Image (cartoon, rainbow, N blue to C red; front, side):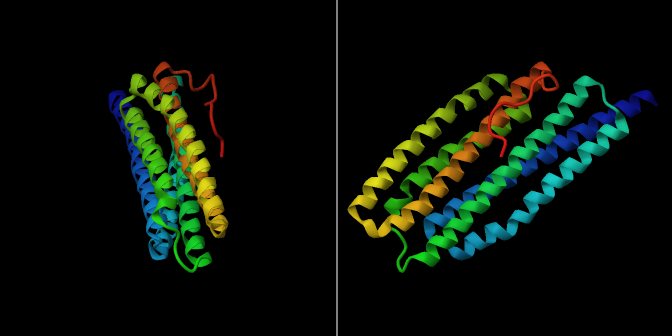
Length: 230
């Protein structure tokens, strides 16, 4: 009976981790859809991203409720508690990734409504480039979390500086573009907000990657995660 209880508990923890990874895949897809909608000037696609955000919230609330219930029901030892709390922290970062995707989608709709003609594709070149970097980081961070791959998680953390550098380059390019055509200043402001939202995706990917090392060394209970909190 005791062995059965242990196996059942292990299965509950595994299911919780799987839910977090499923949420990660969904949040990643939301960011990609939002960036595509912005790049294409597709207000309908952007509205769809916003409508789909409810599922991000459902994932987060479901994981939070199951985490609390599992701790109360099983009263886990420190190592299992570390794993369970890790799932909750991953879900928190992923919910904020979903928030960033929704923000990008809203910007796509605002841009479509505020201009008679959509900005040229040159305007979105940096958005797409940064999005590839940030979503690549998130994909890698989730895989590192799945495998508890500490070495690769360190590489993901290192790539955050690349996203920050790309943001600065993009801001300079946008400023140059607006100096050539001052009528686009409103578009530039919206695009800067989109770039900042993409940067946040990279920040949350860094948080998840940073969590991997703490999970592997069982330090989660002793030290809170570094990085962004909102």
